Picture 1 (spheres, rainbow, N blue to C red):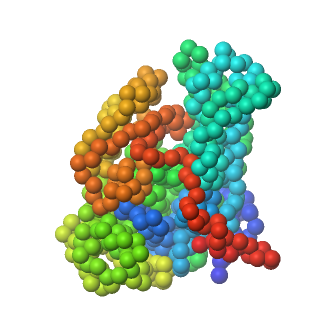
Picture 2 (cartoon, rainbow, N blue to C red):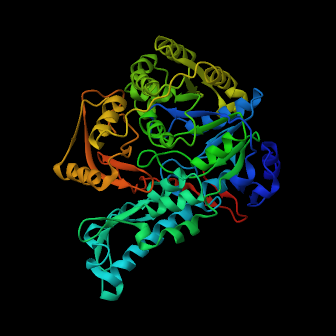
Length: 546
């Protein structure tokens, strides 16, 4: 049974005056009043994964169960996770609060509106959109902004493909200037990235002011601060920027705050929540979106650049026999059948992810997220393959058994974290040209042979550099279903060309977004969305929310 959230906070040493209660089971925490001074910072554990099947490999479930397992070993631990977006909740994946006995609660509330953070981020984003069009309305294209060069779109926290490209301002002049634009999902908004990378409210406001919205008639960058939008945007986010505290089914503290996707954004929870947790416990378990080629690479090369949090003391790489067989050529409908040969073939994908994590230096533990259909023969094959790669394998049964099923993994993580930490290194230096940074990620992380782009894309990247943004890291947006940009290229693709289709500067967040393949910043609903199965009873109980 869940404890009152005040008791969870008290167990962390958080005083009552540092809490803003949202009922009895969740609260916001005021960081300045919460973290005790003089405490040695905890160790950060990062959870990533191999390339997933469409249903995912249980990375969040594993992270939650690992935090529970660490507490069962007598190590004071907390989970620090992203907030679910309504897009996946009602779309393909359903809820994102873990599964089985390894969940954070209250699950339904977290999956839906929670404390309203994503709505506040959406409002702040769209306030800037309205102020852009308001300036165009009163000044026309000869004022501060050239309407043909506006880069700032609108945002919505829902999968809605028809909003990707739209025309606004149709009708008489009182309705504004007609122009093409579109919507991004809130998880891909630069405001979300700014929210998650800001170290405090003052930094948040400064970063919001640095957001590029378009260009002047003479081709100079125009920023949100020049529209005097940064103050009002920060005002909308002043409460949202405080981390949310909930708990797992076993009472382990969980900070859930911020929710950028990793395939189209940087894929990590807020810096503020991570820093807060590191000041309160011995082990902080965080997860990065999708596989090592996406969330983990961006965590290393973007999030850690500011030096606000330390590199992970250990990394957990989640694998499933289902995913191994999928990358070994088995169809989705046959993944429950024993197939040791496919496990061996599919290990090429996992092997590449092991290689990717090792490029950065932290110690690594491979976690087998166990499914009921897994067989001992298949596990034995995986164990021998990991041994060949000198990688530690721990079986994680947290879905079925919670923290008890995570003790083996927790013990291996503690051993790795408290052993030789290795030497952390970034993938590339910031003084490289943007094209060289893209090539470094493409070749070293994805395994590409080359990078190609059309002339207009290359010119756009050159313009970004000429405008003074060349020293920023790159945030590559691509499919999560393959190491390449082709979602059908399973296993370990080789000798392929990464096709760059577009680029944009996120100057407030502090990175350059590089789009590859057919990736969209506004997803669409699948043929049978999860929304069709979700309802509410007459007494208010949510049903069908996985």
